[in-house]
Amino acid sequence: MTDYSPGRNASQEAAAVDNLAARLRGWADKAPQKAAVIFVARRQADGRPVYATRRYLDLEAATDATAYALRATSAQAGDRTLLLLRPSFDLLVMTLSLLKIGALPIFIDPAVGFRSLLTCVTEAQPQLVIGVPLAHALRLAAPRAFRSTRAWITVAQRWPGRQRFLSLARPPSPPFPLAATALDNPVAVTYTTGSTGLPKGAIYTTRMFVALLDQLGGLFGAQADDIDLAAFPLFALFDILLGLTSVLPDLDVTRPAQVNPARLVEAIQAQRVTLAFGSPALWEPVTRYCQAQGLTLPTLRRVLMAGAPVPPQLLERFAHLLPPGADTCTPYGATEALPITAPLGADETLAPSGHWCS
Image 1: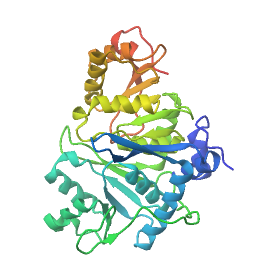
Image 2: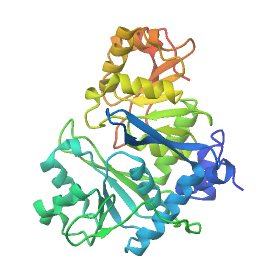
Image 3: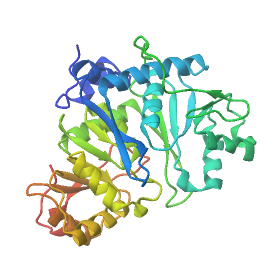
Image 4: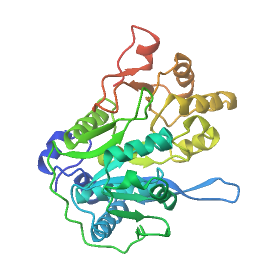
């Protein structure tokens, strides 16, 4: 069996099996009982989240069953597939299932607004659209943007009209035969947020993802026992491919500044999170809350911040919240160009004589 431990060079793994979903299968074989994803399953009467855990064995089984179901609805290798799902366990299952088929998942941030969203859809020309029921109202509002779409698939519950319903609660199935992929073939498309102009579609290849995984596992010191709080949806996918445990936080990723800091801190403490990735807009209210409440974050050993400039005051607050030896990192890069460039540690940001995070 192939060794998928984080210490192995990701390029060597990809040389053996290019399909990225093979990494999930490798972890399911190697550590089937290990927690893969921790997510909000339901809410109590007062709105507080109740978290559920899915093991690597569960995730592998769910993605195999979903891949078979997608193929039965006409999904096939190479299909450009627009995902209009909220950041969730369902989105992660669907993404991995599409990778198994060899289809091309397309991600568009709904925060770009209605007009920009339709512009992105028109440019992407999706052949399949998979979404929550409300997302399918888009085809009624702007049918011309979806002229290339041959199939609509709804998850969660049925929606009136011509579309197919796919339940993610499916019986076990045999291992899905992974599609053969090449390192330089497109594997996903992510649209930029449009902060500097119109959103642009960034085409990622398997080789680009492999290089990024090498960086995350090496530069950021990701270890097999790490528990990562993934405030950026795509990083939950990276967590799984690295064999980590991914915690999907209770927040609206399109409005990180409106996070409930108490609930996020509770999740970090209850799940004993060791790594966390989020934007400065997310960490500003969280660190201010911790400072006001006299709280620390003793389980965290590394915090990554990206997506916007990081104020020095935010780094200084983290210096008082994190345990000795922990660090913050600011990776620089662009959605259009993976992998990221060199990450800066807080010491280097606050003092020229500091060091790289490692």
